[in-house]
Amino acid sequence: MTSIALVLAEGSGTIFANTDRSSDRAPLMVGYVEFMLNKEKSQKLKLDVAVWMKQKSNSEEKFYSLSIGGINASLFKEAEKVGDGPDYAGSFGFNHEMRIAGWKKPGVNGAKDYISLAISPKVKNASQAAPQQNTVATPPLEQSPVNTQAPGPVDTGDPAFRF
Image (cartoon, rainbow, N blue to C red; front, side, top):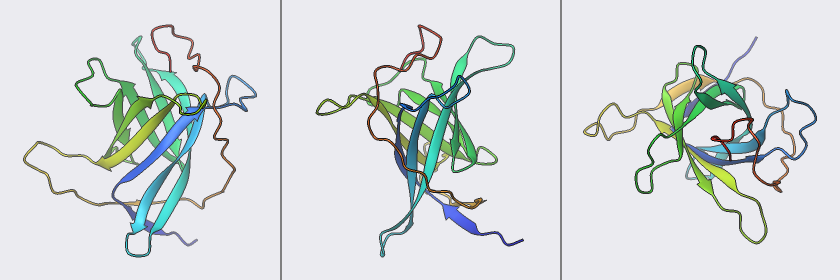
């Protein structure tokens, strides 16, 4: 068996309501995240994203559970948004070694609202500004078309937690 190791340093992408949702088990949202592999050659790795609503065990707190190219991530609603800070924040990676943040954005020219994502290395404190690179092994990618048109707000089953 052969595996490929990739260094994923920073990524960005978009998630939006899944218009092809065929069952309750299907993802609420879908989208993509792109990671820069080689700036000089403008080479990027594009991974599909699927999003489900989950609930923490022993808690009422709900969060988004993401699969980004088969790698798990989680996004929790920020209790108090500060300035231009994210609406959601969480972790990404096999060992939760990276930070993922999401900002609610209005659709343009009739498009529906979406969430813009940013993934970056975690910074332990404000003085540690130099990013660290994380190596993750990725499974083979399956390319699937992504519908860029999104319907209205996603009903997550919780009136206080709507997208």
